[in-house]
Amino acid sequence: MQALVLERVGELTLRDIDLPQTVGPDDVKIALHTVGVCGSDVHYYTHGAIGDYIVKAPMVLGHEGAGTVVEVGRNVTTLKAGDRVCMEPGIPDLSSRASKLGIYNVDPAVTFWATPPVHGILTPFTVHPAAFTYKLPDNVSFAEGAMVEPFAVGMQAAARARIVPGDVAVVTGCGTIGIMVALAALAGGCSKVIVSDVSAEKLKIAGGYAGIVPVNVREKNLLDAVKAETDGWGADVVFEASGSPKVYEDLLRVVRPGGALVLIGLPPDKVSFNVNAAIAREVRIETVFRYANVFDRALALIASGKVNLKPLISETFAFKDSIAAFERAAKGLPTDIKLQIRVSPEKA
Ligand code: ZN
Image 1 (cartoon, rainbow, N blue to C red):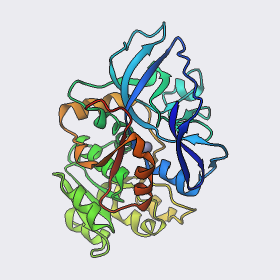
Image 2 (image 1 turned 45 degrees about the horizontal axis):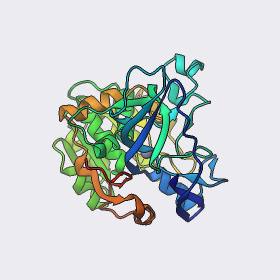
Image 3 (image 1 turned 30 degrees about the horizontal axis):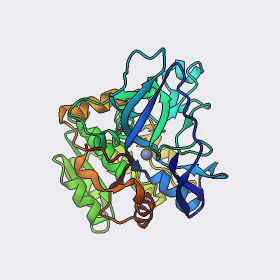
Image 4 (image 1 turned 180 degrees about the vertical axis):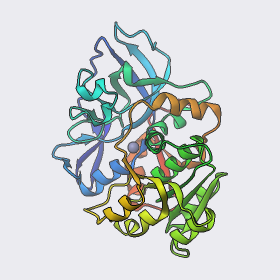
């Protein structure tokens, strides 16, 4: 079957590869329609590794997908052929302690699409457990369905923050995930979300949403901006979504006393962190790794119209142009938030 294969660092091919197509009793087979290009896919392409995950053999990329069910296993009662769906890319061991606790995202045995050595889904068909396959509401397009995966990270972050209605939040970093976090925080009850970055283009896109206050830290100090927006009190929740070690210098002063700091962005290396400053003001620190139990609620929010992800889809490429999509993504244009690949020629 044709697939977009990362052969080694910097080398992509669109070629035939053997992928398992056996539909187990609890699985569904899905014809992919749209697959998003994720920062992690691009990082494997340009660097060949993320932390301990190293690309050692050819690997199919892509993990943000939506499509149509074409076959169901004999035990599957929740889905049928023809259903439009999106998929959660991680498959935990359902009998693990982590799964039983509902924290299957941190199950040590989890396998995750396009994370070495597991193949991704930039290919016409995939087989997936029905338990991690979600029916799209009628008014949610395949393109939006393929956005649920990155939005799920924002949902997880908002849940971790334990937002109270009216909270003021800050998101440092206006990349795809930063914007997803801001939208989930607004949907979760924040009165406003201050989003900081150095890219005027990205901030302009985020600032197009009601409730998002963009702050360009090239022009303005974030701490001053947050003080101005909160009568000097600080933000109830600060989401760190940039991964920039420099951002950490001021971070604890941006949070109000007793507020929460939620860490999402992966810094390239260790960062120094003022523990005393955190303790002195009883800052609650949370971390986010992927997501668990949020896809249903993410889809409900999109279907309700409370969250609109469409303005974040910057361009859609045909499957045959997948390599061009990755070359474009690797350039990191400031106006690109999400690039998608339409695997199937079928409409919306
Ligand atoms: Zn992703």
